[in-house]
Amino acid sequence: MVDLLLGQVIRFCDIPMTDQAFGMEHLTQGAVVVKDGRIVAVGPAEDVKRAWPQARLHDYGDKLISAGFIDAHVHFPQTAIIASWGKRLIDWLNAYTFPEEMRLADPLYAKTIAETYMDLALANGTTSMCSFCTVHPASVDAFFTAAQRRGLRAMGGKTCMDRNAPEGLRDSAQSAYDDSKALLHKWHGVDRLSYVITPRFSPTSTPDQLRALGDLWAEHPDCLMQTHLSEQTDEIAWVRSLFPQARDYLDTYEAFGLLGENGLYGHAIHLEPREIDRLSELNAGIAHCPTSNTFIGSGLFDMAGMVGRTRVGLATDTGGGSSFSMLRTMAAAYEIGQLRGTPLHPAFLWWLATQGSARSLKIDDRVGNIAVGLEADLIVVDLASTPAIRQRMSRADSFTEALFATIMMGDDRAIASVWVNGEKHH
Ligand code: GUN
Ligand code: ZN
Image (cartoon, rainbow, N blue to C red):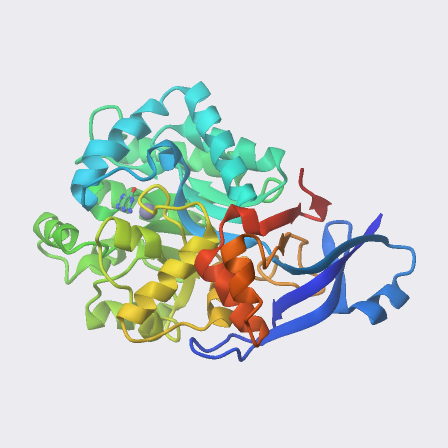
């Protein structure tokens, strides 16, 4: 069966600048054709309809067809503790996060949370994500099983910690290596799933554990490795006291084989010039987590300074982040840009949440844009989803001005339809 979706279309033919619509292509009356899970045609509606007369039509009127959103850094196990009040990073981990992650020792609870998380992600138009799981291997099974059931392209891994975490959330250097390796062999490359080697951050891993995971990564260099980097100043001071020989925070990863092009570093806010140069030299990935950075009080990421130098993606960081919505996450990225004096263009924000994230995860040859040959993960966005947005949009003089109203004020009500791997999701 061939499906033909009609509506406005947004896609990217080049990497945009942070402050211009350059690189964005907008079709007012466009069409996207989907066959066997792939995008096989995109263009002006009349031309495409003529070329595909037998296709089943899905007329979305003036709604906007886009690539699905991609969340480059999320903690699905923290779904139930999102919006927990009043703490900064280390206290927030101890007070809310670790007790909740402990509950995922129960595989049934892990499954419930994974299912809830996936439903929320899809309702918000997120069709791919890269998630931390918990220390428990069954949490990884729960995550991948929930993604697989929905046909999603999903990435994730067992969070490894062998110090500075409560009993019950700690593994060891050896078991982190063994369990991660077994899970990698079980899930990596199965359907649309990829395993990601996942040391939580250097304060919760001994040098032995970091080295063991560095060794595992060297054995599987095609896998991504994800962790956290320079999120809060207290955390950085703690890292300095735990690793007195290290030149800086990034060096605590580099020294153990955990720095590379396939590395994805969450937050990366308070970086030293050497760290920026090194990340840039390697073209490493960075996940910008704006709602988390304001919610936990971490700081203001330097988008304009980093995006030309490394691969930057956009991420909710749920439940440190305060929303499952990548629209709300784009709005927070805009607000942080404002506080840094660098307003981010609506086209750039949309790119960041789709192709930018895909590039940070190295899956941009498969998803993250509307282009022939890519997998058909698509969302249909209602650009007039609430009375407040509708009245603002009616005053807009351009497409990007209308889009910006949904970026700043939109949520799951704006997501009218979701297509996963060429199938309409119900
Ligand atoms: N640093 C280490 N673990 C975490 C986590 O779970 N969330 C956030 N935001 N930062 C972290
Ligand atoms: Zn995180």
